[in-house]
Image 1: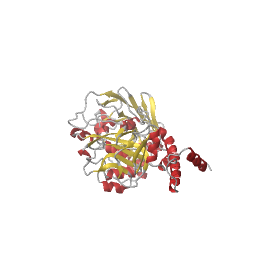
Image 2: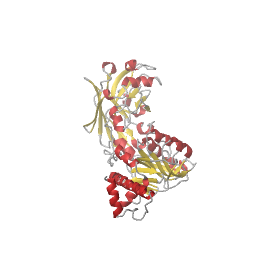
Image 3: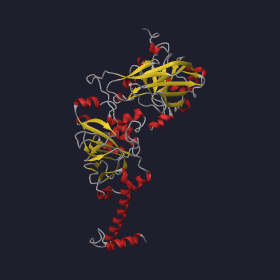
Image 4: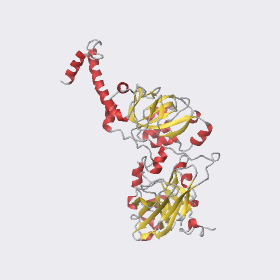
Length: 487
C-alpha cells in the first residue's frame, strides 16, 4: 500500500514529513494547569500515529489514563523558513480537526518528548475534511469536542496564548516547514480521560466552513508491555489529576485550601516550641519530624506540605523508576509557591535525597522549604541556594545507593510522623512540626496568647520575683496579669 492509498493519510493526500505539536497554547488550559508559558514549546509525533475518522484507538492492557485532546491541525502548503508572523499564515494551506490522544501511564520516563505517551498507532486522528486556510480568519476558528454526544470542549483561537501565525513563524525559525507537514496547535480546557466504549468527536468550524466531526472509538487492548524490554506503565495521583483535568474529576480528595496570608503571618510569629505545647494540650504528641536540623542556622519557614516518597533501593526497581522524569524530579518541578517538599527517606542518611540543582529548582518555584529525613548531597551548595533545608545530615552519595524515587502527593512518614499533602509545617532552630490544617487557626491563636503570657512572666522574673507561684501563675498572679493586660 503506498502513501496515497493508505487510509491513515487519505485526508492529507499522502504521508506528512513531520507532525509537530504544541505543549500548551490555550489560556483556558493554562489556567486549568496553573501555569502560563512565556513562549510556545513543542514535541514531535510520528506519522505512523495518524488515523482516519471512524478509526479505533486501542487502550493498552495494564493502563488507565488514555486522554483525548481536541485540536486544530494546520497543514503546510508553501514551505516556510524564517517567515515573520505577518507572512506565516500564507504558508498554511489547509485546516482540519485533530485529536492528540495521550497515554499518561507512559509519561514518567519521557515526559516532555512524549514519544511513547503520544506516539502510539492511532494516537493522531485527523479529518474528516480539510478547508482552505486562505478563506478563513485564523483568529476566529471554533473548536469543539464531544464524548458520547456530550459537548466537553468549546473554545476558539481567540483564546490562544500564542496565535496560529506566531506558532508557524516560531517553528520556521528552527527548521523548514515543508509542504504537507502538520502542526497540532494545542488543546483548550476540558481534555479528560476516556475508556473503552467511549466515542470522541472533534470538529473545527470557520463560519460556514467545517471539517465535519472527526470520530474515534476507544477499544481495550489485550497485549501487555514487557518489563524485560522497557519500563512499564506507572501512574500516581499527579498523573491522574493531570489526565482527568482535576483532582475531583479523578475521584481524588480535593487539594487542601492554600494557607491564607493572614494565617501564615500569625504562624510566622510563633516558635515551634510554643506550637508544640498547644498541640500537646490537644492530644497531639506525634507531630514533630524528629532528627532533622537546618543546614543553615537560623532558618525558619511556614508552608503547606508537598510530599515525595522513596522506597529502599532495589536494582530492578531503580532501573524502572529511577531514570527520566522520575518521582523526585516531578515533585521538584511541581512544587508551588509557599509549599514545603517533605521527603520520606525512612531515616536513611546513606545517600543524598536532593542536591543543589533540585534545591535551585524548588527555590525558583517559590517553595517555602525542603524537609527530608534522609541525607543531602552537595550540602554547602544547597545551603547557599537560600531556601530553608532541614535534613538528617549530609552525604556525598547519589540517590541510587539507598533509595528509589517512588511516588508523590501521598501520605508519607518523615522523621517518625505522618505528613499528608496540605498539612501545615513550621520549622525553626528547635526542629519541624506538623499542624493539621483544620485546627491551625485555633492552635496559633492559643500559642500567641501563651507567648504573650510567657513574655509577661519573664519580665516579672527578670525584675526579681521568684518563680514559685508565678510559673505557672497562681490565682493571685493570674489576677494581676489579667488586670495589666486589660488596662
